[in-house]
Length: 543
Image 1: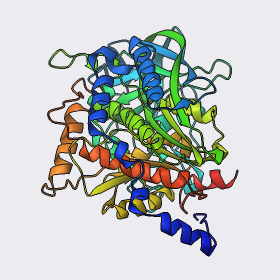
Image 2: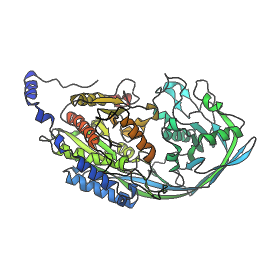
Image 3: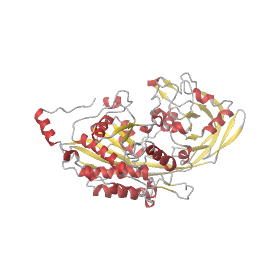
Image 4: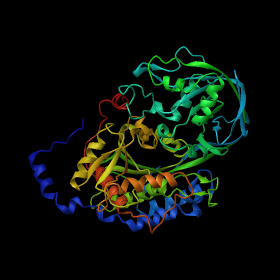
């Protein structure tokens, strides 16, 4: 439950008398769509080379963020520095162009990039599968709270596990129903396979279940990926991880004398995982580079409770320079994802600094690295916090702002997780706006951006998305234009800022709501809590 602040009558009267329209609007005038647009354009310019960590793009982005945080009047957020070092390793892979499949009935090759994409998190010189046995392990989930274990009675040590993406869908009362839980995320499936001792893990891709097409997965083909440097405390990894297309997976099953009904059986209790009479061979050459990436942190120290913290976060990184598209463009500019959210951090900082009375709690503006590689910058911060997580009141994350006009609604991702959504709803109602709920919770978006690493540590975390009810347009306009942009430009070089077509009124209005939420918390004593049914509730309450 929310902790409410009850004031004596005299104090309440004073606050009521002061609660005039000017006070309510304090800080609002600082927001500027011209400033926001300029910052998005700068961050997503070709000269930033797609903002990939460990590149010149990172050097320029970190310098830009430091400059803008100083200009906004923020103090350094990490002692005397605006930077938090994030030790990482870059693993560049070169996989064989084919994967050999030997089944009971036939032998054939799958084509790299078209049929599958593989890589590794191991920092070796090479890894391989050599006639390695394949086991179908359903969804690859071990969830004691749901009495579900796809690995029960199954020995997968030294083998490759073939698993489905998302959660089991046979019972609406299990897991999150339609809403994906963390068990449905690809990251979890690789982690669990490694814990089980598997040598490899391949996920069967399905666009509706994954919530993105196979073209997004193909961006990982023979490229580089980052993870945290764990040489002091080595992690456990499979040799080979990756994805198969559904047709490739069905072909593999057919080679084992099975059919696609085997895949459907994994949705229901009673499913029995079983070895397949199929063996795989593949090889990956590896080049590793240990280096340091950076989170960028600025703050406004609280005037009365400086140890109590509200964090605004956005990831500054994108995909860098990669495979050219059909126009020959190879710079993945990442204007929406996430130059827009990073620029939003600067707008929020300007607004908080313009307040007539300084916030009583500390406000932190955290631009994190390597979200696109696995949420690594926020993961590092959450494990090495600059500000105590026990004293962190809330984490508010931005990953892609509204670019197509002001909306009546604002979307909350992860309905029913914590009380921050109630606070936001109250602030929205004051402005004549409404809360809309995530349209496709089966996509698991709550587990796909940087707020998730705060949630895993028990910090109430809010993640909002753009609304679709565009003011002055018909009811289908917002959803149509938003979805079309995602389909055409998500993780593609064409995600570029266009001052002629981007209408930033909606982004500004959404930023104002996030500001009002943080401003409310910054002057109060409330500690928003997790709601019943949230998997994160026991973490916070157990501290």
